[in-house]
Amino acid sequence: MSRFRRVDKVDSLAGFKAAKTDAAVPYGLLKAARKSGQLNLCSRGLTEVPQNVYRLNADTPEEAQQDLAFGASDRWWEQTDLTKLLLSSNQLTRISDDIRLLAALTTLDLHDNQLSSLPSALGELQELQQLQLSHNQLTSLPVEVCTLKNLCSLTMQQNLLESLPEELGQLENLTELDVSNNHVKGLPSSLGCLTRLQKLNLCHNQLSCLPDSLGLLKGVKLLDCSNNQLTDVPASLSEMLALEQLYLRHNKLRLLPQLSAPALKELYVGNNQIEQFETEQLATLTAISVLELRDNKIKVLPEHITLLSTLTRLDLTNNDITTLPAALSLLPNLKVLLLEGNPLRGIRRDLLTKGTNELLKYLRGRIEEKPERADEGLGAMTLPSQARINEHKIKTLKLLEYSEQQADDIPDELFTAAAGQSVTAVNFSKNQLTSIPSRLVEFHSSLSDINLGFNRLNCFSPNICMLLQLRHIDLRNNQLSELPSEMKNLTRLSSIILNYNRFKSFPEVLYHIVTLETVLLGNNQVGAVDPSHLMKLTHLSTLDLSNNDLLNIPPELGLCSSLRCLSLEGNPFRTPRAAIVAKGTDAVLEYLRSRIPT
Image (tube, rainbow, N blue to C red; front, top):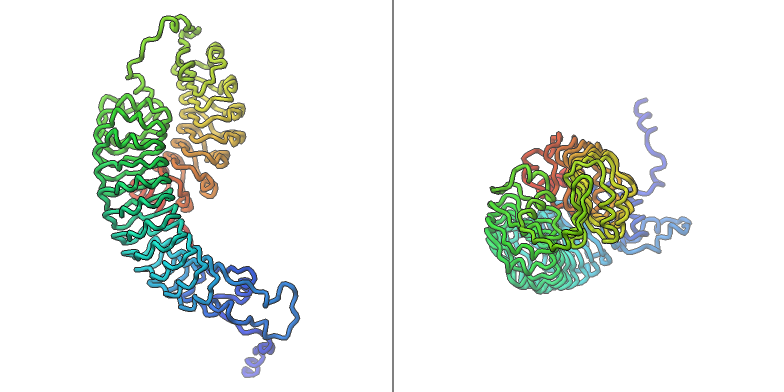
């Protein structure tokens, strides 16, 4: 009886069913790829590419062998050539020469596999525009790849490359080249032939010098040479006229590079051996906004630092600076000044912790003020609180100041004196204000900077959201717990300081202000942050979440590639460990990215 039972289990319809092509690649997926021209085989545990993938457009589909009627959606003879093949996050050890059969490919993604070599047949994919090879075990790049005239993006980070072929310069349409995290010791001189290149990443290699031909790359906007062994940079870098961001962190530079790149906005030279920089070096940085000089050996800042009139962020952390030039306070756009870890003399420690505005105010006080004319003195008004209206500041600096008065409101006389003066900055800090003065809206067409720090504000008036020119808001040391949704109308806002308030979550409205560059939210009670929303803030470079209640740091936060300064210390999370946090932003972001599930 047992034998008959086994016979009953035989599939009597087996002869009518189509044979399976490959368990790892369902036939339906291949069928759909013939129609769409795209095939996604990521994260399928593949150890090799199935033959029927290579022959997708070469072999006649199975349904062509069957005597069946086809609807409009099943016409196999109307198939599309495969243009996009995604094979990332598998266990591939080789790619067959049969890859040449997919001659119409424009995108080939092979990143995160176990490839140690590539077939020369890749050179036959002349339509290829994107080739992703990162996170493999490649020791060399086939010279045939350099014949791909249409290639725009070539990413090879996290491999074992020791050199690049001289023929690399033949990739005349390349706009992005990433060879970071390899063992490259030298670059081919032909690199200068990549005249359409816009992004060049060479970080984490073993480069001791850069070729002079880099100066021919007139279109490069971002150049990253961090974590190498550079002792200097060629003068030809000054000829890179489009260069906006230059990263030279963690090298062996002794001098600040003298660059005349007219578009350079961000220069990062932290963790080098720079001891000084001269006036000539400053004079060439005509468009600089961010200057990072942390972890060097700088002892003195030149008085002519006022030449950096466009500077908004200056990082001098962990140097040997003992004194600060008072002229530093004259930089008109400086918003962030970092000085931790310097043996400064004559400046109280508590003053350093109060932030950039207070420090610059102190330095301004050290500058000998010019005596005012007699007629200006006659025009001064005295308020009931005995606080003098400085009409000179209102008229010449466009600054409305009423700070350190311990007042619970701002006298109307002050606003009256400033009427029609196109005030651009307001400083009402260190008072006892419980609400934002409503008359601020009178300056809606000009006001760009508000300092309301060190007050007792417990709500943020939506009326302030009518100040559409606002770029900077300082609300530190208040009692705020939320921000109004109307703030999304502040489409020019670049920095907001909310330290020492009562926020229990990251203010939702900030996710919608895409112009934000700096968000300081330290010393609150924030319990979570949404990285998917943060990634939309493509200009966000500084994020302070220190001393909050973050129990978990989402790994996706590592994908916020615009971040240059991320502060997380003082939170109760267990990972990343304190040792990683202490290494700085780059190490934290890299750790978080490594924890993202594939």
